[in-house]
Image (tube, rainbow, N blue to C red; front, top):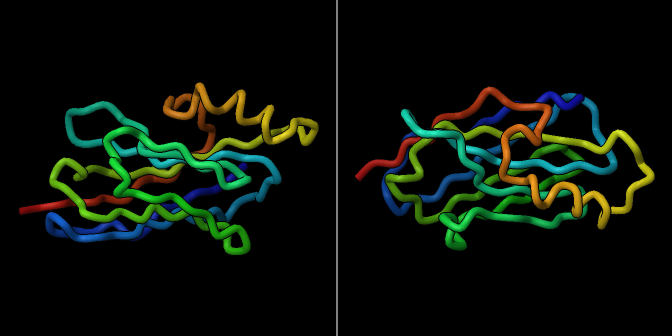
Length: 137
């Protein structure tokens, strides 16, 4: 399994930028998808975006082009670059991962499985413990 841990969360002001990191210190896989979720107090956990092992990304509508997900595979780090932060971005941010146990699927087959499930927390087997982002003013 993956072992994921988030870093980079802090308190910022509206309009600021912040980059979160999610480091995998567990096993590495050829075919996988990673995702960022967030959860504000009193609200359900919601998907922010995802990226797969071939670099394809999916984002929630509320991102509005402000956020970018990327992966540094040699370091096993996924990033969430957040620009023009808003107060409603305040939340605990989690990273999550799911990997293909079989290497027989093409990336297209993997995506056909993952894409309709990308925003569902239950899709992901491995989770970090979260990092808090607070946006004020």
